[in-house]
Amino acid sequence: MRHRLQWVRAALLVVMFGAVFALSAVAMAPARWMSTALEHATDGRVRLAGATGFPWRGHGDLVVRVGGGEIVLPGTNWHWLPSRLAVGELALELKFDGATATGGAVIARRVESFVLRDANVALSAAALADGIDMLRGWRPSGTLNFRTQGLALKERSIAGDAELTWQGAATATAPLGDYRAVVHAEGSGDAHLELATLKGPLHLAASGDFGSAQGLRLRGTATPEAAHRVQLLPLLGLIGTDRGDGVVAFDIAFRPRGSA
Image (tube, rainbow, N blue to C red):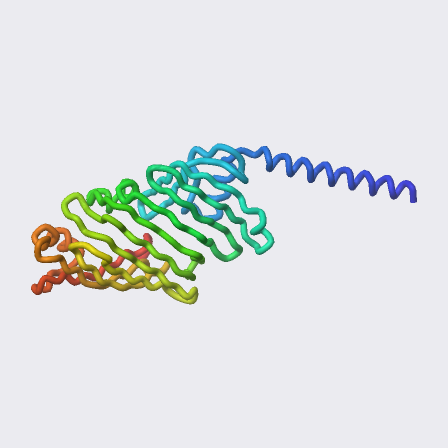
């Protein structure tokens, strides 16, 4: 019996030493471990560049892959939310304080989905366009404001609601105005999108759908005010057809890479 107790004590000591060593290793791990974990959790869509600090708290530049380009959000701070482990989430609170973005959001990885929650982020349209080839030549300006209480992204579906406004929208050649897009998704199919003008010389009314299989499909009309018609028609001619009554109708489709 005494011999058995000695073996049990020895085993407990080994387990305790291993646990302390593991916790110490995690606590002292460099922030680049977080970059690797984030990139893996988002299937390569999001990563951290120049990360410093530790996995549970640090600083770096958040890089988001969009289409054929990348959007860089410098001045990103993260803080791990260990309490979310109790509900099956690996969650981080992000704070942005850079030239591209300000504000904050919570990102979380669940077993079957990637979740964006409690987001209120202001983004520079000009800085965002620098990372996307198809937008760079338009030289857009203004501020994009993204908000959502919860948006869950699965492999083939989206669930939740989100709002995106573009204030002071303009291109290199024309003022546009203020616009609002609302996304709603039930989680069982494609997400639905509604786009409308809040104010400005270009009146947009459009709706569409978005899904991982077919991408984005957006249909609607654009009506420039008479005083800005000559200035805006060349731009609108790139996205739609002039009906002859001052209204340009458009049907835009952005398909995922690799689709036919």
